[in-house]
Length: 314
Ligand code: FEC
Image (cartoon, rainbow, N blue to C red):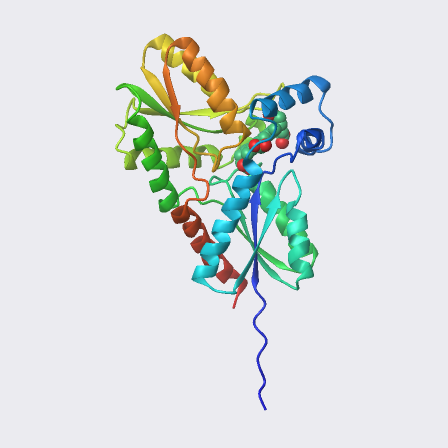
C-alpha cells in the first residue's frame, strides 16, 4: 500500500506595485482612488490626461510590473521549486492588494510575504502597502510578514552605480549626478526614515560609482503633488535652474533612485519636463536607466523573500 504525502501548502508572496490606468477611460477612477475617493477637479483630470497622452495614452508601468513579477517568480522557482505562490497586488489599480490576499486565501494559503517594488521605506508609501496587505491577510485568518525596505541591497546598489557610470560617460566633464525620489508632504515625513534611507543609498551608489564625495553629486525630490501643503524639496526643477544660475555644473545626470521602472513620473516628469528645463537653461541632461526586471536584482529580491518567509515557520 502506498500513501503519497500531499505536498506542503506554498507560501504566498504578494509583489506590490503602484498600478496605472489601463486606458484613458480609467484615468478618472484611478485618480479618484489615489485621492482616497475624492474625484479630481476637471483641471486636475485634464492635466493628468495630458501627461498620459504625452506618453502615447498610457504608461508602460503595467507591462513592466508584470515583467518584474515574472522575473521574481522565476527566481523563486529556481531557488525553491514549488514553495512559493506569487501574485501581484497593486495600490491604485486592479488587481488590488486586497484582491491578491483574497486569491491566496481562496487557495488555502495561510502564510504570506509582502514585497513592495520600491526600495525605500516611507510610512506613507511602503507602510500603506504593507498595512493594507497585513489587514487583508490577517482578516482572512492568515499570517503576514512584510519586507519593509531593500534600499541597502548590494545587487541594486551595484546595478544603479553601473547605470550612473555608463550614463556619465556620455555627458561633458563637470556634469553633476542628482539622485531623486518621489517627494512627500512634510506632514508625513516627521520621524519617518525615508529621507535618511534615500541619503544613505545615494551615498552608497556614489561611492560605488567612484564619484568624488563633495560637489559631484547631490539629492533632490520630484513629482510633488499638486496640493497647497508643503512638500519636501528642493524639487529637481529648482535644482536644475540653480545649477545653471550658479554655474556649478555643465550638465546633470538624474538618477531616479526611488523608482524601479520607467513610468509616468520618470518618462513625463524627468524625460519631458526636467529635460526641457535643462535645455532652456543650457545644461546637458541625461537620466540613468531603471532596474526593470534585471535578473541579478530580481534574484536578490527573491533571496529576501526566502529569508523573510522563515519568520512564517516551516
Ligand atoms: O505610470 C503610472 O501610470 C503611475 C506612476 C506613479 C508612480 C507613483 C509612485 C509614487 N507615488 C508616491 C506618492 C504620491 C502621493 C501622491 C501621489 C499622486 C499621484 C498621482 C499620479 C501618481 N501619483 Fe504617486 N505615483 C504615480 C502616479 N503619489 C498620477 C496623482 C496626480 C499627480 O499628483 O500627479 C498625492 C496623493 C496622495 O496624497 O496620496 C503622496 C510615492 C511613490 C513611490 C513609491 C511607489 O512606487 O509606490 C511615494 C510609480
